[in-house]
Amino acid sequence: MTVSRNGSGSGRRAADDGSAGGGAGRQPAGTRACVIHPNIRDGQAVDDPRSAEARLAEAVGLAEAIDLNVALRQVVRVDRRRPASLFGSGQIERLAAEIAVAEVSVTVVDAQLSPVQQRNLERNLKCKVIDRTGLILEIFGERARTKEGQLQVELAHLSYQRSRLVRSWTHLERQRGGFGFMGGPGESQLEIDRRLITDRIARLRRELEQVKRTRDLHRSARRKVPYPVVALVGYTNAGKSTLFNRLTQAQVFARDLLFATLDPTMRRLELPGGQEVILSDTVGFISDLPTDLVAAFRATLEEVLEADLILHVRDIAHPDSEAQRLSVLEVLRDLGVEPEDEGGQPVLEVLNKIDLLDVESREVLRSQTARRSDQVCVSAVGGEGLDHLLAVIERRLQAGHRTVLCSVDLSDGAAIAWLYRHGHVCARQDEAQRAHLTVRLDPADLDRFRRRHGAHSEIRPAAGA
Image (cartoon, rainbow, N blue to C red; front, top):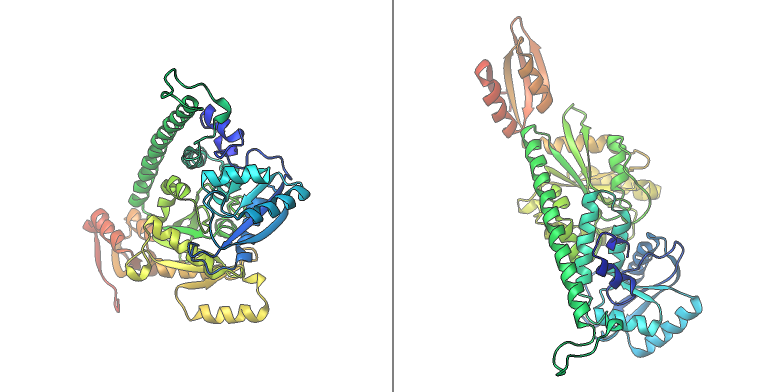
């Protein structure tokens, strides 16, 4: 599996061995694959409003994201989960025959498989089998570019792999001890492998803890400046990176592809009133995001927790846009982001890809969002609605600001520049010796201005404020 390239040697052997510990492996481009979505009906399925066909389509998109050639795709109804193989024996026989005819090398099961289920399916289907978690880990391994991203993905992969080492070393059997009670088939190699992976995980966590400390230092530095932070979040392929590039003229990799980019990026963004903010692009979310990945990427996603405003980018043209919204909110809750109506961070929904809607639907959407302060509709590709989006961002960031009248000596250029840099100057009137500026400031910035320049400035509430 690609993401194990930095792991221990024994970890790589387990992955390449084809046992229940690996992922898709380094498959050549165009490898023929089968994608199966188990439509589980035994009452244990995750509550998801999307149809089984929509879930299958998403799984196919995930497979295609790592250049698998999906030759066979189908929804398989599962009335009762089988502990040994998930599917019933008759279903497995039918699938094995179809896979043989289609000459499939890799089968993707769009569900979480236990190590036993994965191993038994590989034996019966006679091809490599990976589950949803393994597939997402494989994608993340392909996409991670920075050292931090690679560390995060490797940690998630090894945590996933460690639980799948049982009985994956039976090809290295050794004889039992002389009295028949010491050792067993492959026990020595298995324990060595588990220990190596555990040691590697401990090292990765120490390195990521250093990354977290570095990020904390960067955040502390930004608080001293300070620039408001606006974080982009959303379902994968909702258009976050395209919107990020449009707003900041950046060159972040953006394609119509699931998880096109993983590594977080920050750029300066100037709002219409001249205020500068930091725009942060984060990794895309997806339903059933592996817990290990959420934990590994927590240091990166903590940027969301520190944001002054969260932009939730949605693909409004997608038929499952509402279900995707719920999945994103679930991940945000896991990260500790409370709903805005419960005292949490302010969230602005950016309804993207309106260019893909028909004219009538687009007009209805514009009419709906015009009456709301928490939604904006845009087209990141065409640029439609971006000016309005920037104006709304500025308005939301200034919602708690205070309007004051600051009288400053004209010779005090540092104080005047500070007000322009950190606040929104609504009006200015210059006299012979003094400049009178009507400014909207964040309460924290107002306190900061008083400490730095209050001795030579007069500050009072503006008329009507």
